[in-house]
Image (cartoon, rainbow, N blue to C red; front, side):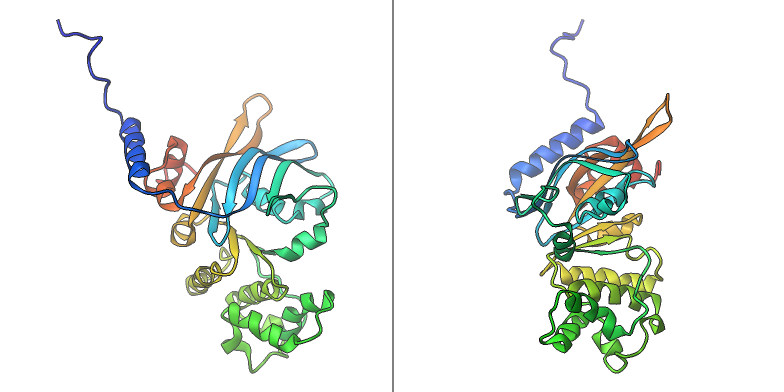
Length: 291
């Protein structure tokens, strides 16, 4: 009879994966990252019903961080917490903490308007103002009273958004005369004109054609040298192409109430999430087994 007590443990896929992760961590020196946002125990609710529960993670400076997951898992709710956009919804309540440069963004001494100046947002559908191209970009600086060097500021923002060469001879034309991809880059320029620290992008290319999508992705790669970017995307290929870090969110369903609540399943470097995830739910999602 073989000695069952001393028999080796069966080899499992999870065990092999854990061993490979441990070996890689031992072989590679730790990467230093500057933490820009420190999220701890964040829960976001609407009318007392949690849309997202108990999320904790760190967002790193000059990184592109992607939030992926099925519809209804709270990705858009979460990204709106970073610049307090949910404050504009009367039934919304955010609990837990988001520290930005160590400061609690939801502290009583923090001005939400100042937060939105430093943390700009680009939405899924381009939303230019019914004004000229120039006036769209100049809008924020004018509101802030930045009158000196306005022309230079507008040009710089349009150059950063890779739009200057396409519009420099028609700055007085309506923003609506631009294509969808150009309008989205105009909205990015409008954010950049007030010199933010962070760009939040909620599915910025979902309504665009492949060529315009590529332009937005190339733009993000260039902008991360000067900005921190957080993006929500349903396009997993896009997350794999642009993001340094990826967070996978999923949904927990209460069988009795049929209530759906978003949860953070896994957060890691993007290659790990897509090729060597530590949670089977992540693996099932990125391989198309659900979602």
